[in-house]
Length: 331
Image (cartoon, rainbow, N blue to C red; front, side, top):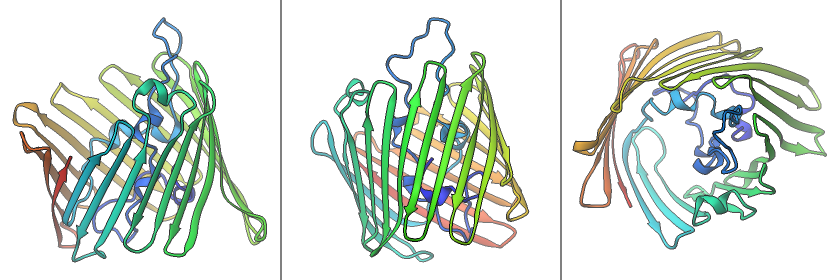
């Protein structure tokens, strides 16, 4: 799970351009090394560990371009082997401009990340909003995670997650926004089981309790993967989400997503692709969906400089809107 903001949302992502919904926080996703297979996982014919529930659709989602609008500059600085900082300045005519400071305290090698050394991540922007992560490997198979989020002077999220990774299954429990005075809490339970070398089955149970309401949502999920493609499907009371990822060759990857929400009574079908051009130091991602939105983002590595130029454009033909963005990532 990501932040508690994602617990009550409909399946899939809500970051389509020109949407009235706010863009999802970068804290809705775990840090990259959180989802890496444990170093004790072997390739001796036994069933593999299925990974985390929230990363089931990640292969397909990584193919789609991320919306870019306005002018953005990101400066990354590695102060030591385990301490990193970054500065982000975003100027926009559509949304409020902001400055964001990001700091990470990670371990210097992958092996130590699977031990009991903690990872601390913090972020604050010019509006006073604060995001903080603390990740800890309690044992070789047990991981704990704490998240705090505030908007200006108010806390909006505080959650605690514990995950156990067995040799062929993953189980996780999350407690979000517990409030004794208001008698409210959100509980989330995940379970994934590797049935065969390519088939994973599992589910998610979300329980919410408050003074005025109480209820739960059960979602069932399945994933079948082969060396060059991955098909994933999950469905529940809140809707359905299906994705298909295919790697055509070393340079081209494609993905297709279908999302249906019972809350908004809407469905969306999207097609995305990624083209890698290593000789030109470029990566291009494009997408088109059933809402008549077409977009693309080009990333160009400016060698020998330690910088990447990012250019993107998204067109909403149904709403007759255009958004163009330009960014530079240094470091």
